[in-house]
Structures are given as C-alpha cells and as structure tokens.
Length: 75
Image 1 (cartoon, rainbow, N blue to C red):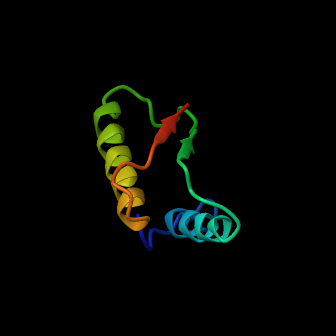
Image 2 (tube, rainbow, N blue to C red):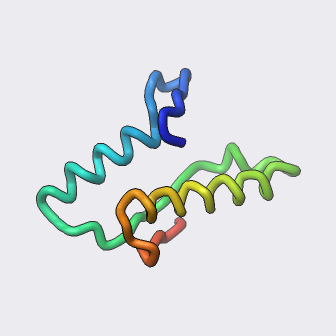
Image 3 (tube, one colour):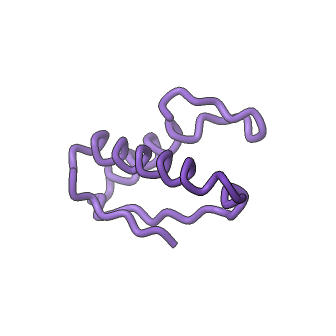
C-alpha cells in the first residue's frame, strides 16, 4: 500500500509502481494493468486474505488513475 516498505527488496512496491506507470503514461495511454505474481501467498488459510488485499490494491490503482473501469488482467 502507499508508503509500504518491503525490507526484503529494500523498496516501496506500490509507490514504485505508481511512479513507473506515470512515467510510461508520458509516452502513451494506460489501457490496463497486467498483474502477475508468484504463488507464495496461496498457502491454505491465506487465500481469502490475499484476495481481499488484492481487490483493495486494484481499487487503489483505479482511484489513483481516476478510472473506475480500468481493466486489470490477472495471469
């Protein structure tokens, strides 16, 4: 989430993603987001929590770019 620090990668993943998307938008139009992530969060008992967090993240992206219908393809 915004301002969230990930110590294993020494990064701010959400903030970094927003910066990269805005830079890309200087040369084009954001038509959608392709989301691809590993399976480490798929452990039993965590799937519902993961899904809730993922839905929240996608809503933040849509709010950030003022596009409530921004397509997000999960692969």
